[in-house]
Length: 273
Length: 257
Figure 1: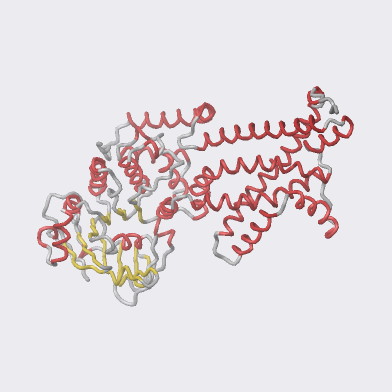
Figure 2: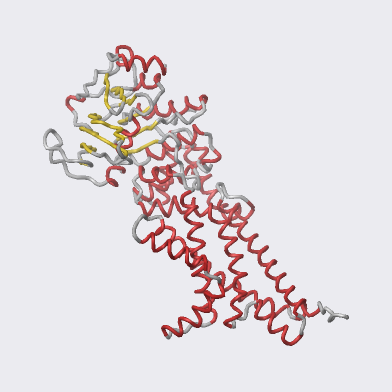
C-alpha cells in the first residue's frame, strides 16, 4: 500500500507534508498481530512522514488501537517490520529503503515516541507538575530544578500552569488529559500517538482537549491519532486510514471525508458523523 | 467460699515492668515488620513472576502462614541451634520467627495490592520510556503501598500480640513479665487483665500511627502533619508557578482554555 498524501489545500494547521521526498519517521510493513488464535491485524502497511498528521479510523475491533500500540511496542507485532526513526523494531526487511536498518531497543523507541491514552493514565500519587517532572528526571536525567522549569513551561503550554500543584484526583478529565499531553511533549518526542484521547471524557470536556491537540498539530508535531471525532480528523488529518477487520480498507488525503471510495468507509462516516 | 481478693493496685505498682515488656515486644515486632515488608515484597514478586521460583514462593507462603508463632520460635531458637550449631539471642530468635511467619502474610497482601494498581499506569511509564525498575519504584510501589498500608497495620498489631508466645524462650515481653509477677503475687486475674489492656492500648496506638501514615500517603496528602511536611515544597511550586505566569514566553503562547 502506498500512502500518497494529497497536498493540503484547506486552511488546516501544520506544514504541508512532502512524503515523496522525505524519509518516513514511522514505517510499518506487513504488520500482523494475533492474540492466541485471533488475528487482529492482518498485514498493515503505513508510512508516517515528519510533520504529517495521520488519523486512524474504523469501527471498534478494527485494529486501529492495536496499530497505534504497536508503534511503541506496547503490543509486540507477531510478524512484519516496524521502523521508527531509522531503527528496526520487529522483523528486518530484505528490500527497500529500510533494508538493513539497525535494530533498536524498546526503550530507544519509546523515548522517541510519545503517547496519550484514552484513560489519561496520570500517576495518581504525583501532582500534575511531578507527573511531568518524573520522566524528565528519569529519561532526560535532568536535575530537579531544570525538570521543574521545563515541566512548568509544558503545563503553561496546555494552559494548566496554575494547576501545577494539583493532584489528578483534583483535576477534571479534560485537565488530566492535557497534563498527560504535556507530560508526553516534555520529552520532545519525534512522533505523538493519541489513542482515543477524548473517548473517556464528558462531552463538554472534549473541546478543551481537541484545542490542545490542535495546538500540538500547529507546532508541526508528527501525530498518529485514533479518534471518533470526525470534525477534528477532517481538520488535521493529512492522511486518513480506514481500517476494518485488521486490514486497511482505504486511505485518503484531505479529500477522504468527502470523497471516500469504499462503501464501508462511507457507511462508517455516515454513522459516526 | 470466698475467693482471693483482687489487688488492682498491683497493676500500678508493676507498671514499669509491664511497660518494659511492651517496649521489648514492640522492638521485636518493629524489627520483624521491616524485614517482613522487604521479604514479603520479594515473595510477592516471585510468586507473580511466572518463573519456576513462583512455586517456591507459593510453597513458602502457604507453609509459613500455617505455622503457629510458638512453633516457629521453638524451631528457630532450639531447632536451629541443635541442627546447625547456630545460636541466637532470644531477641534475634523472636525477630526471625516473626519474620518467617509475617513475610508470608505480607506477601499475599502485597500480591493483591500490586494487582490493584491499574495496568494503564505501567503502560504509561513504559510509553514514557521509563525503565522497568523505575516504573516499579516510582509508580507501581507507591500505588500498591497505599493499598497495602491498612493491612500492614493490622499485621503489625498481630505481630505484637504474637510476641506473647515468645515467653517460651524467655523473652522478657509482656506475658513473660506477667508470669514472673504472678509467681510472686498470686494475682493471675489482675495481672493478665493488665497484660491484655496493654496489648489493646498498643493496638490503638499502632492504629493511630498507621492512620497518620495513610493520611500522608493519600493524594493529595491529608492532615496537619502533611501540611507541615509539604509546606516548603508547596511554596517552591507556588514560586515556580508565579515566575512562569509572569514571564512571557515569546516562542509559544499558552493554550487558552
